[in-house]
Image (cartoon, rainbow, N blue to C red; front, side, top):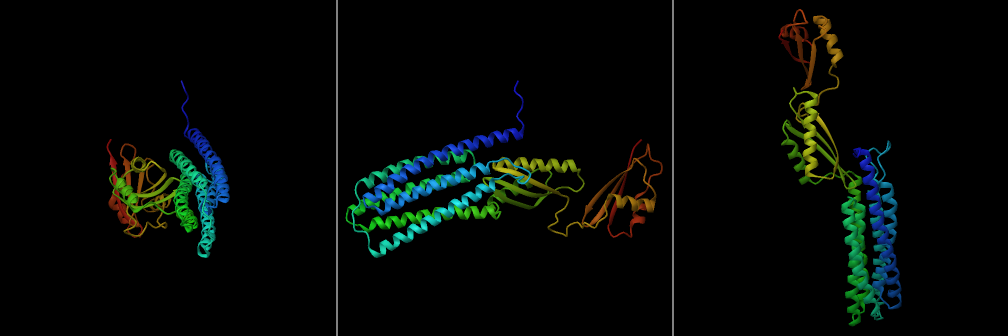
Length: 386
């Protein structure tokens, strides 16, 4: 009989598997990028295609991004520790930000250089046919590695790997542009080759900006969309025992979602029942969005958005017992006192056992003795049978 796997052990195993998959697909992509980069740079230089040369530089930027991915994935997939109780996935977000910034810088430099070439009319040599072969090989290869990398990224829930997949696809798009521009240049429109180089640089900038902006939004704790937020609130409101939801905050950490929610329940239920209601809400939300990693729920006895929050200056249990002792005497040892803090008042419930307690305090007497206390709301006395 196999021993059950603990949650911590299961998470370690999952992290190890995800890391192995991410490393494998990234190394395969990096080797492919390096080979294609060499082919395109050489072919672009020898056969007079500025577009293919820029496309080759794009491929080498893919190699650099692959190295970033390998380094970041190794760190971001570490287990949570004392300094990082939620894990290290924000490092993956930062890596995506760096990757996007690299793309923007490379694209901007290439766009500027080739715009100047276009303006100055420096395109005067017809590209050779090997340019078409190199571009066609790039299209097929990069589309394959895009699909493979994207599938792995979704399986291990890694935005960084998915971002790297799209980086590979931009290389395929740019190679398609090279194909058409080369055909046009061979037909006599020599300026098409340089124009294509500018277009490819623009594609690189666009993809880099998307990665960068998405990462910035995550790093500043941008929440879920209004549609997803409303859906989660509806799930909570429809849970038995929930009277209302007056606050739901969300943020992302990598592919995971972290939630904080305030649930309004009946004020007279037990602590354990309130906790159980919260756990039912958690279950419903996890069923709706599987990438929710952590949900912190706060049980409220009243909606403190509609009225002032309960003051921390209200007396605690020990202070209230001392007040009762001064005014009505020591309570019998078996007496249970239940306190409700609502609307900035304290509402008391006293439970007496007639089998053990002698004289039972009346609610009227307690009410009369505590009437002058501003924090006093009401009192109810319960007496059990013999």
